[in-house]
Length: 534
Image (tube, rainbow, N blue to C red):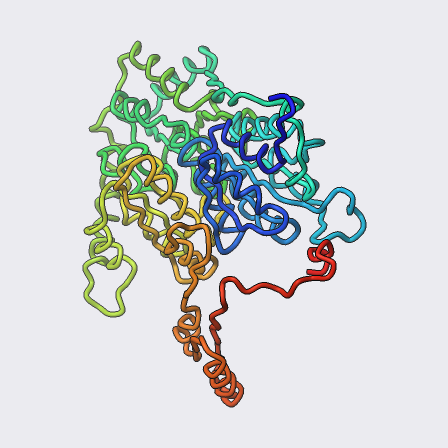
């Protein structure tokens, strides 16, 4: 490779490919366009989006669904800032994500450069790692570290800042520090004494409850958790995105008696779930004052949050569940299915299901949520990936739409983020197409939630999704809300639309003007000033 040159854009693309990165989402422009082109040249699938925030949500969903981070590629300044919601959402959800942001040229720093902003400093608050490569030669090493950091320990987002002058700068391949693909995350296991202690607490319980979190879904612990539930006869409650780790129609699922299960359990086993707002912090009055909590998590700092645990098991959820399985096989213990606790839970389940069924079968118009979800449930495929967001739409949908397989529900998550839906759906469709062909994605949006990222419907309809639709009828959006829309292709049509719009002082108008795709700015006398004059 002596003497052969490679550009910064090519180095970035090759390094991402070496780390087995499959998907990139973003909005191209100065200075990152060449990076997107180079990524596609090496086989990375690039999806052009309408908003950087939605692109970041999509890339983070890839991380959750595949266990390997998606990449969000954005321009400097405002483009980077629009990703911060997605970066924070990924980090708080514990999903791996890589954001690559262009930034101003190094020789223009502090001069008021185009879209200049302290991006590395800003990124630190929302990520596990925020870094700018010191040279082209170290780009592969920086990317390897970012990918590894995003996946190891508790997953999260990482930010890589690329100065604009790095993109087309070239360097000899012989001087580059190339890196092999990072190893899979190491699998840690709990101490044997902690496993034994946890099993002893469970065996002595009168009203046990297993709570399954999305950390269990991420660790692919479904087979071992299903075996644990069946072996021990434990009632279980999934958190929203853990639905399907054990199928919702399993006889031990007590989701329909959630409040009763939480309030009266004397021992709770947390499998990859956190005692945060979703689980009411583990505190009275939603829980017993003296409830015993067995906390199982990959992050040591999470153990003991809000409630002093009766036992702590630090490690990978799948590995620790297998340890518990082995321990209970030795003890030959099973919680009795005819206990008073089961009688109470089943009674509450029956009562709540009957109430929901009554609402679902109402004939009144407009329809209520339960009626809508009843009909959706009857018609959608059992193995579809469900994306849901909104207030009542998401909350009622969670109770009415069952999940039978793991990692097939995506919603607002731990951060309660609205606007994630269409980005998540695009990512899920990409992953499903490549890994499970034929699997459908169903995205159910509340009207308010849809408004956050509704323009991504254009991304969904684009084939391939790398550019805007040339004849998109944006004027119909204005018409849909009661305004007037005009589709204009000629000077005469433009004049007539403008005259009508100016004359009508009561109705808002949108004039959608078709422009020649080859049309550009007039030739600039000083082309090197083009970017700084934008």
